[in-house]
Amino acid sequence: MLCSATASRSPARRRAPPRRHPSARLPRRYAAAPRTCAVAPPAIQASSRCPVAREMLDGQEVVVEHVHDADNEAKELGEWFPFEIQDKEGTTRIILTRRDQKEQIEVEVFLPSPADPLEHNGQQKHDTKDDNSQAHAINGPANQYYIPLVVKIHKGMASWLEISCRSYPDELAIESLAFGPTDESFDSSNVEAKICNLPEELQQACYAYLKSRAISSDVTNFLHAYMINKECHEYLAWLRKLKGLIKSK
Image 1 (spheres, rainbow, N blue to C red):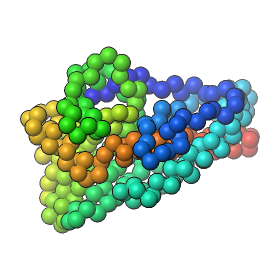
Image 2: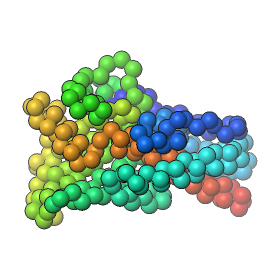
Image 3: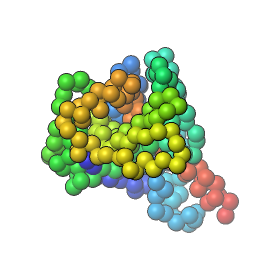
Image 4: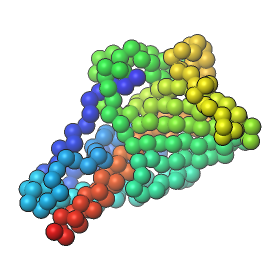
């Protein structure tokens, strides 16, 4: 269920601030933003004698203002966003929480991951934009990345349901689900099932179930913009620390 190639992680040369993609303005209905940053530290020598390192660090400030501006705009979503966002700096994930009737909903959202087209072909994905759309096999050009989601729904004090997903820029794909009683000694792996092994009717019911719990296209599109901004923010924070180490030599 993976797709496309990894994003380039080579250091960027000095250049003028990039033009903002329309999705960076974060309108009420969010278009999934293109992936532009890579959070993994590049393979460089941590030395001021490394010209590539100096060039990369000097160009860091060019994009800082742009990323911070996008982050500030993202915070304006609180009026309609159905979840509370817990975002701790220095981490690779955020946590969304929400109470719905007798349920406690928690969503772990991770930084973008590169997609593998070799594993993606022949798998199924679901278009969250169309309630009646059918899961379909993907062929041809695939998306370059996806955002891992883990949705955990606590049914009071008695039981829980966990659904693992991959959110692509235009679609949501459920990978597996597990359920069980609220008992720390309970092994969830005993009741975990791959979505592709379930009957088609039950697969569609799982997608409808997520949508009824506010995992909609508006939410996933926003999460793409938010996590890409977070990825850039964490990467720049890493660059600042590296810059401090280099300057201290």
